[in-house]
Length: 292
Ligand code: SAM
Image (cartoon, rainbow, N blue to C red; front, side):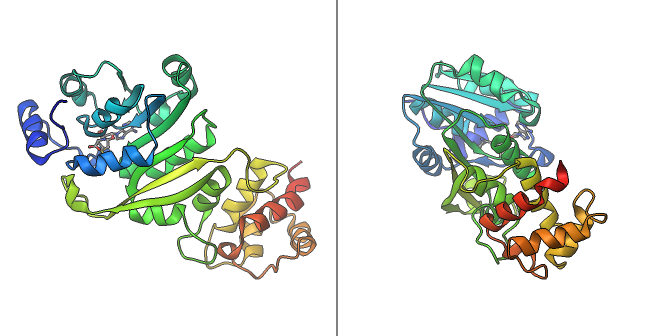
């Protein structure tokens, strides 16, 4: 077995050899603790049947741990300066494919069809660049990928939002989206000391396991997510005021919105953050005729 990339000494040596300087704007905080990385790979249940999709391999710290256990690893890296480094650090592994691309612009279905058609199990596993955590998670969820789930390191504050309960300050439209598509669990908290350079926020690893079916019956998903987003548009406003001012055509349809709320037994003076996902589903089903 080769020496781990994820040690402070080896990481420093690689960075110096290539004269690499971190780009803060790309969320470059590399992991220097191989035990944490192995726990991430464990949490993802990666086996010799797994095709792992990684976002942001950096110098290959997590990629290497994945390559040792997975059948294949496909990793998207936006920073071209890392490509020659990765070619070097990952040269012992013949089951890794690096794609030089912004993951937000990638056609993930096409990449999966091309690179991971022959695996029975697919997981996204990553130490995410923190400046784009939410758009990446939303893309992974809404693209409806043929994957078992997602295990990612992210800011603790975002992990709290993903796994939040109704009525808490962390509960919001991201929570509902994650709950709709997956079951979310925080796997572990991670101290900032295991990164180089150290970020100025605490981190956590979260596991999102894709649901076979959504937990609620929604007539029209677009309407459901529009109603959810509108309900959280301004946290201090009542549900009715948010729906009226933020739903398309809300102002012209105030009466119908009031009727829909009454029909499903939701007090219009409540705040969006108190609604359970089942209430958002019944409300959006009652409002769906307005969108036809
Ligand atoms: N996986 C490595 C580790 O754990 O040490 C590096 C993680 S670092 C937090 C995030 C990585 O994502 C960096 O290598 C950065 O260049 C890359 N990155 C940033 N934005 C990206 C994007 N939109 N698409 C793909 N990679 C991106």
